[in-house]
Picture: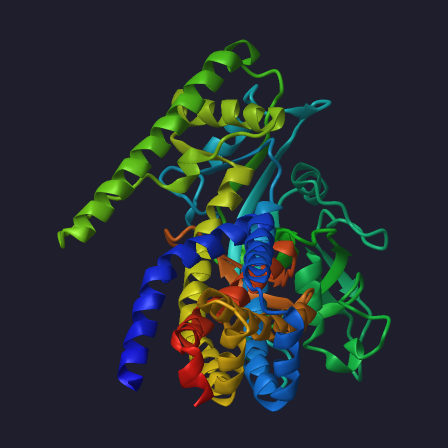
Length: 530
């Protein structure tokens, strides 16, 4: 009998697994779907169940130990799931809120990540002089940058923390201009990099010699991470991060923070800016990796309508082609054949959402197609960061896989509880049948009880996991084509994460309680009373 039950559960999970996986994915993007599905199923069960709801609550209270243990299992599963989803949601928020829609990144030809880009000096001056670049008075709004990843030993590493970290450094020529182009101001107590990019600090400790320190401007996130290297200082309640005037060591040198960027919620939150003329030779990267320019609103304005129509047509064509490839891939998989063709990368589907974005699209098209002085790869800045979501999608699929494994345990836990409840209440079932309740009412009654256990435990788990909202974590965001960025992100628990948790709790309760409820439904009144 036990083997038959296991086979039925596996079959049931296989049948509904694909459906609920799709539903959970939809709920992650639209919380109304998750809340609506959860509330809708509970309402339907209550309406179909003719047995008073108080009967279910009374039995749950009578068997409070079993109910508590089963509910705690759901609490553990859902709290873990909530934290994992909060991590992925934080990554989505980070990449989606990074960049300016009017900015264009100019990389070397063939480069899709600024970590692998290497622009020639001759190209930079000519690109800066193009009429496609917006100007503030006579100054082109173009930032010359060198992106470098540095392996930094962690000062006074405490137990449980890594001894090294990957530090993102951005070498800039004109830090106020770079801040203006990226839309990143400083906190009032800070200043931008000086022309020299270095300063002399007073002697420290027993030394009587002044200290030569290199100036940096850093993001809020990395300021908090660097602060954790100094637990004695950060233990003070008023200190949440390093501030202007604080120092840290890297590459055997002292670095002094002159300003902290208001960068929370973007990838720049994890960056350290310094003079390119200093860190370029220091870390063996003297050329520019990236030019970030602000698109001129007047550039090729008369061609905007025709370009927009052509761009939207290409997006529609790319989506149609991808859908066709996915369909043929599914057919090949069903037939047991190999299918190797891949759809176009997602960034080609990104549709501009504002006039600023269309300004950037026009400039991007110019540098990629009509600019003849040199070959470059121009990318709208927001599209570049949105392409980093591909790694987020992989994390989401991994979480779904882990959730399915954990869910099997939850299903068997509910099933065991409900079989035990039915064995203890066989005579109750007989009385209910003699009172005129139909088999369908018995089925729905026990199914509703299973769902209630799962929902109560699940809601407690979601509430417990919600405490992770605002926690910081380190991760990598990338496009899956090499490269990527090491970032400090904030875990985010919002309506979407809560909706997925509620829907998963309901799903596990429904699946786990279905087979025991069917066995209760099959009992006749006379058999139950014997």
